[in-house]
Image 1 (cartoon, one colour):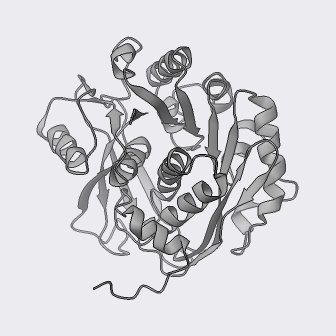
Image 2: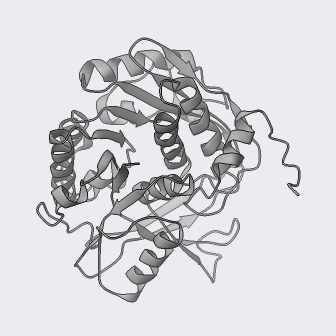
Length: 346
């Protein structure tokens, strides 16, 4: 089986315990996470050979991060080293009507200071058939955007499938460029485009008529998003498929969840999950992407089953603390088959 490559920044995650606010907490829980690393861990959990590429400083925190990735079965041999610091993000988990908050401390991180030519993409892409990146990478710096474009173009030259998660983060685009200026050249090289109910609007101005992501009341009509998929494929004709996650937010602890996949002709719809007691929603979209890549590679020709795997995998992620989706294929397939009882397995 050929390898999958993901490229982006991994950070130290410092989270308040339980539902404490930043002003209340006197300890923080330390883990690691980042969009592309989260996808890599999901794929490794499912038995897929995956390489994660990033730039890290040479210090003990970065060493702990690498060990953590290796523990989960991710190949770290292609990480490049340099720079002075590992990026950090702080998380305060919301409850009911109070939203979660994220504070970034990633300016001048090793990955933010990456430049084209630092990664030997010809070596990285040996024996590879899939490359994945997210919109977070080009958002952190001009150098990261250029390095990502370098990777996409090399993958295109080699005939490697390229996927992206649009992943718009308004708090990251601070270096003078807008997402709408940088993202088109990157997305033009993609075979699979993924986003959520807001990303296409925030990056490309594409949205369903009359849709307001802040006022769903937990209800999102999947049919209304076919026009979003069609418009994305019309703008980026290399794309063979477009996937969207659909989150209906009742409150911070209670969401509905599902997704759609469009192949240019047919809109596939997943089951809708009612997640009433969210443990940790961070990484939910990454879990969907990891599940979708696995599904498309495993259930070849069955896009419905690939989508169902992605939706079930990301539903389960909401029950797991931390950025990583630490579930097995058996657990995902059990939920796909309708077993959401939570009964003890013994």
